[in-house]
Length: 361
Length: 86
Image 1 (spheres, chains in turn red, yellow):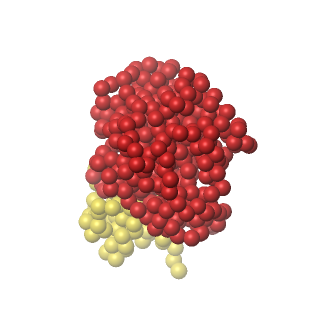
Image 2: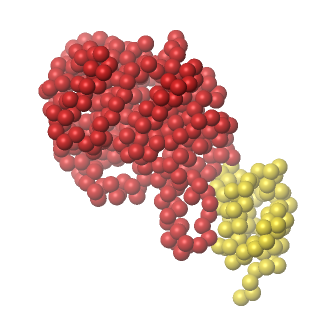
Image 3: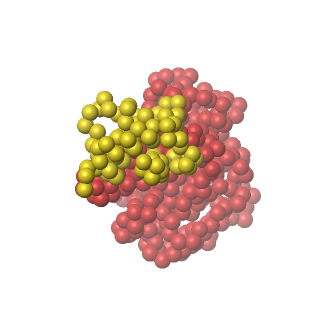
């Protein structure tokens, strides 16, 4: 059992700074949600910030926010998950290779382009010489980082691990992924994501960090009971079996879950599986979705975990989470008790499926 | 020399993304590294590339680096002495 002691999040919503919990949701038009970023100069040393691209600043600032809330100056480990890595610096470096005909390349963009730069920059800033690892496994990147944190904390009791999921979208990656059909061709409001099903979803990005510990404290957000991943189940039955096995492994049934947060993304093909599950293993359980708030990206489960942790800590379900469907089911028109146990179920491109079980302290 | 030093200051601020420093704030003889502008080894590599790209000058002897990059004036003197003639 792990405890979420503190969080820090930069997302397309007003999540940074531990202000009101999604009371003022931000709406977007188009097929791309971009992060609302703080003034980094107030948060990061000026000498370091000048070399940081946007994703590095987002990751470092979210991590600092998390550590500040926890009152921790140097964690015992830093683990990050990212699928795309530092895209902006990668694009800069590759462009200069072409422009300069593979000569006279400047070092900064190359140094900063590697996927582990966010974790490395956090360590540099904190002068943290402890365990530092980055997982790059597409839609399982954040989940892999979580699994590593869990094993690390099991092997090293009484330690505290800083873990985060970060991904950015750039103009180039957005154009490429649009050409591949990942995003909606027609502009739409993120509020309409679930009410106007079509091919494609909306692009997103974000950085969410958590301080995990194996010992409880009075100010914890939530307990992380379990996590599992399964790759490309070929039938809905296989998905149902994987979910049932996960619940059985944690000695609970679907009826013990107070709220399900799913990774529906508005792509009608992708969402078919979620609809099937809502009629089978998840039938009758209050359900909500999160990708109209942060968009689709490979480490979006980090945002979902931030969402679940805050729901469990505050006992409050933001109104924005009830507005999503034409017939939201048990969330609509009923007084909703503060949930004690939340299951996050997400799949990325219907290949990378993951389950995170989180409960109130 | 004054024009060259002014150009160098603009190029240094741009290449190293010195966000809070204006080119005119850099002194001609101000040390660039450590106690001066506070540049580091990665910046040194950036400055080497800057000389190659903008002035077609290669620093072939690594031991020359600390002398060449001591200040904007030493950089300008090195460029003047080594710039290829058209």
